[in-house]
Length: 263
Length: 160
Image 1 (cartoon, rainbow over the protein chains, first blue to last red):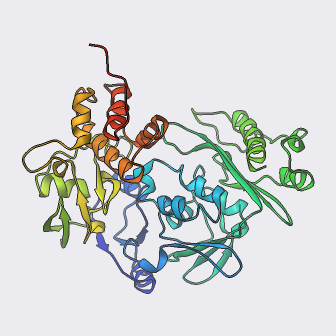
Image 2 (image 1 turned 180 degrees about the vertical axis):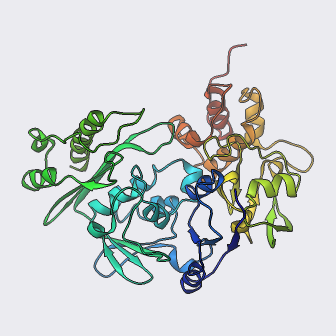
Image 3 (image 1 turned 120 degrees about the vertical axis):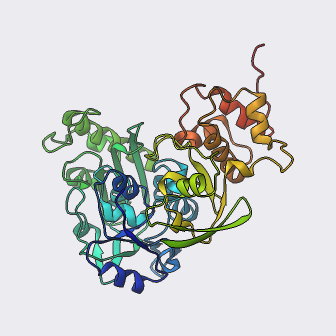
């Protein structure tokens, strides 16, 4: 690891100021960034730890019944504290990585990184959540812009994410057992005005909505509604764990399982 | 270099560290607590698991400065001062839960965190909790057995 300065501000304002320095980089839980630093894939001059900022941690309900989660909240905390409000979201958080990773990794870190196989992007996109930063609110549909690419500007920090709570929801993750990332995973959320289906781990463009399935499931929320649908393999990830065709197949199978489990 | 202070196994410690100093380096090289092992150094294997403020944490994947003010527990703090093993450590011995022993500190610390959260886990829950702890000797069966035994649940005794 190259050397860097390390600062640990206790407020969002101080963190944003520190991130204004040249080549400064925010550090959430570090479960992706620290391995990347060890491999010298990143070489910030200053690392701005968000670990001491209490104002971006915690889970609560707002007046509209949305689950509001601070960007610095760990997966383990979401798994425990969101369970009563949004069980499918809590269950998803409780299966990220392993227990020690869940005790450090954060919602904001996962979303800022936008790994194409991460779990949280699927939950945020399927839930039609709003990503709140130190400067603005970003709709999930505008936030994810491709593999490791988001709407965030340089130095912009995710302070909170607000999740509307669906009537029914489920996340089906086909685990890549060595990394425990999603080989492919699908989050299905049924709202009063329609169904949203978000897929992670499959596309080279990162998380995406399977709109054909959304239309079919909005008419009939049953696994059978997917019978005539298929997902094109074009643009799916091709690696030693699975071919594009395999991932495309998994998308349909996992969507059906998620609908069956959501009920 | 910046000063970092924390409590390790109940003892207040402080030292000057670099920003890039990992908690595991601080423990092993700074404090001489070499019971916490570095296996993979990529947050996969779990040999470096310690508790930070009561939560299982991979010490190779957190910076020492992010533990400023924290309460850290390592394998050295598990046995009583007179050397009496903790119930989990004793169960690992009784049920042959280790062979080479390299993964054992992390296994014991993960097991302790599990039993803090879930005092009577099922076998499936134990196995799931150990997803981030890799052992290349035992095949896990005796580790799982030891943790179930440490939780006070009956387990089959291995054939002599």
